[in-house]
Length: 255
Image (spheres, rainbow, N blue to C red):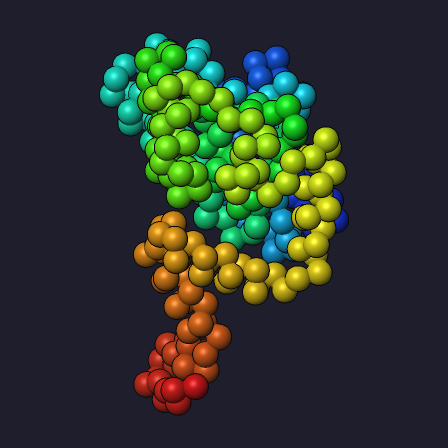
């Protein structure tokens, strides 16, 4: 049974974690399901925004299910659990559609890293964020010390990762980590998402690529994506393809 669902309505996609009994903690299967849904959403041209949400009120995501990695060998833990999770969260961060994390409850460890991989976040007043990995003898592995460091001050990350402190919603708002604190974060997130249906999808996509290139989020790929988008719209590109198919020498115009 799937514990990560994909729903699409009014050009808005919602990827929803559904494992509330375990505070939506990630399992190996859930990571795979998330990856599949991200690939599906990327290929759907009509989608203008993606919400990343969760069932239940206690937690958005409490991180990774210890039963999923607790018995892994050091090599398996590093090669598969950490690298696969990192790769999938990178996929979310680099999605061409704008993304909103709906923090209905606490976001700990991998849950905080999941939220950080989204473009913006809306948070419930009683929700908190934390990096509690040291409590079980590990360190953040899905970009908690990397991507998160571009979103929060170093001292705040150290406060969570080295001292085990939680950060509340109001402080997260003051730090700029969340866009808004709301009693009903889903309602606010949906209203923000609906605004994207009035915007140019291509302008939003290219704008996201430019912002990511500027801050170093997969900079090489973003630069090449921008260059490829520009050349794909050129007359020279069309001439090159036509000449190849006609088995003739291309006559490029520079247009």
